[in-house]
Image (cartoon, rainbow, N blue to C red; front, side, top):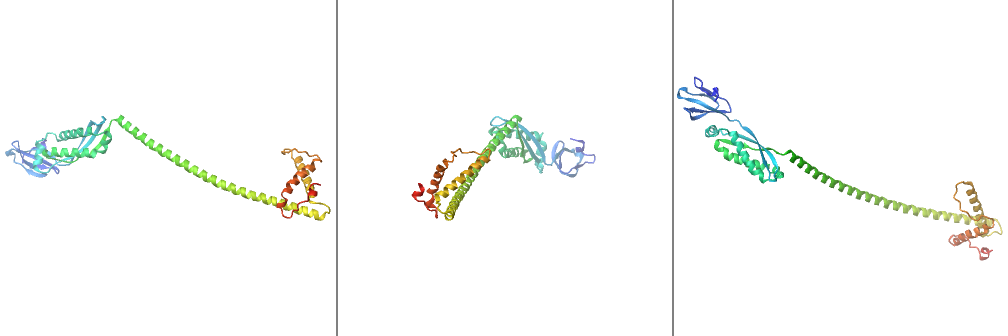
Length: 316
């Protein structure tokens, strides 16, 4: 009891806002002095005994316990409490408890150490609201008879051992790495499938392009050969009409000899030309002409305008 709580000589007592004072007479409780000015008669042994705060208060409690899977954790609870405003609650708070904070802490320890050991570590984080409700229920039931109201009791932190936290972080890290590896493998598979589909599409397009190119090339070769046959036909017919006594065989022999000498000229002009060695004596020209003529004559019926020479000309 401070000197401010003792009655002044004139018996005037000032009570601050959000506070109350208990009044005794001859050591017995007689009433509560609420905020304001009060007059007490010192000669009747009336005086102020205690000053109680009516503000909302908060108590931080850190309780160490172990979980069902034998992991030690520190559960931190913030208990918010207040004395009730009625005179009976104020009397109970002033005279029935020596230390309300120690009493609240004991109840928090009791609830936490009876609840958490039934739960595994991973579930403690998920069920902290249920644990908080259990603490609130227990404190409300126990502290109401001492004039206190429990406003809230949230669990502010669940702190396992440092090594346990590192192990949990490693487990979570490995789990995320496995998921990332699976996603990466799936991405590689999808990319490989897409690349294979693109390659197949490119191959199909290339095959169609090659087929079209070969088709066009075949048409070009056919037209080239048709043009050669047409040219030969026109040349042979012109030679026959202008030179009397010359048949198609003589004209073809003359053309073969001309082509032969042109070929020999080209081979001799290039130092690195790939050459095919043949019998190039003058006597071999007749055999060469006969072979080439046979090839030409085999295709003459298919060329309109080409007259097939008679047998006597062929064997002359």
